[in-house]
Image 1: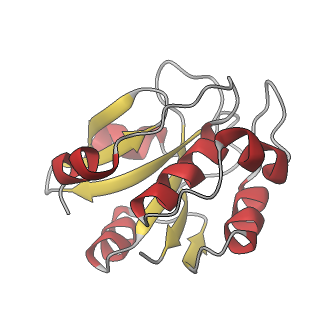
Image 2: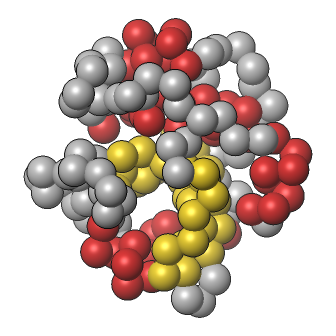
Length: 155
């Protein structure tokens, strides 16, 4: 499904809480799957999201499993090939990256790619297109303690 089809069919949940990009990205994956059981605040509580620091990768994985998402793979030091393989396989791919306007890491859902770019369904910025080089440069946590993290969730 193309990014335009996704947006038309599902809509994009925009985060309300300042540090809720992780829970809201999980919420967007649930919506892609047609699951409307949860809201942002409930997922933020389950994730242990903290104002100013957000959500840890490990908490994203734990809560994804707790709410019934089937994880195909969680990986640090992933590459574009890993991301593309999961998208080609029909997975929804959550990423932790640092957009230029953020100093902290930020969760989003990568939904599509082409030979030049990655397309991101971002719960703060909206629909984004990042060329491959720009994406790879910002695919790390804000403190650069983790690099190229992804969690692929089966559709």
